Image (cartoon, rainbow, N blue to C red; front, side, top):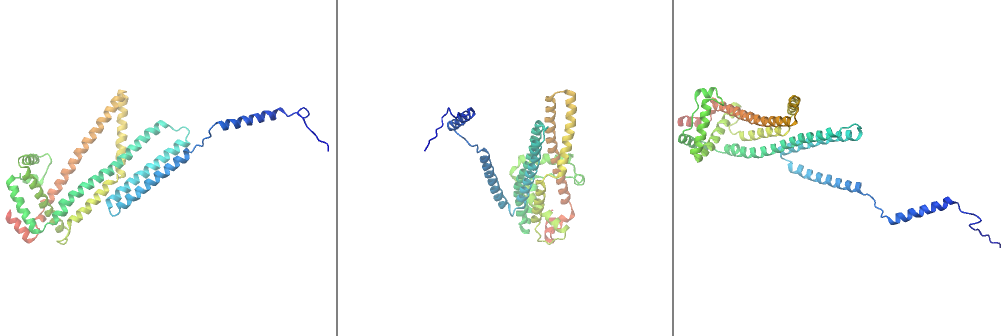
Length: 343
């Protein structure tokens, strides 16, 4: 048997094979010496996002469950969810524009985001303030309406007599016939009434508090009689329940900012933008523009205080007109006769 042997000299190995082998050996040694790390950043962020979404869903489910049976709380939650959905839709549009538009202006987008979040926080703060308003007003209405209506007629007559006694002790200022027909916030008689009330509060603080408490009960009874007579309702009709439901309807309307309000805000901002453009053109100073906008904001806040006070006096005037109607004296046959004798 013949053996065949091969030698390097007989069949030389090509040079490129040696080079490739050395290259592969070098790569293997490099990989063996370097610690290989796999990036799990995407998975970790996805896990945190899913956990956050799950936490929000659990909290929202519990809040919705607690709100069941409370119409005002349900209205507030619906308003908050509506604002959050609007925020999400707008931010989604901004994200798509930022991703696929080549000439997207990032600077304007940053300012837009701040303004948008400002309007969002305005709507949320309005909802929270409505919650506070509902909390305190419900306590006041429970004390002034519900508990007052629970008083029986005999108790009311005793309260009326006590009211006349306290009124006589304080020497309560009586309005003139002209003021009753043509009431005015800044009339002489109205200012005199305010000064009298202030002086009485300073001189007789406890007696004044008692007078105000009795006045609420007497006025509520007169309004109740007027409402029942004017609408031909039974004598046992619960006016306090009707008032509480009406109050709830008004509070629910206060939670949501109406579209007309946003249009008025847009018109005011447009007017302010036009005026600030004139100021900037004349002064060429950002400091003057900032100072002017600050004073406009302060002036608007002060104006709203006066507007609220005007509404308050208008409501008092309406209440005074109701009090002067003839129906308020027609309580019952005995009650009206007894009150007229006391007068």
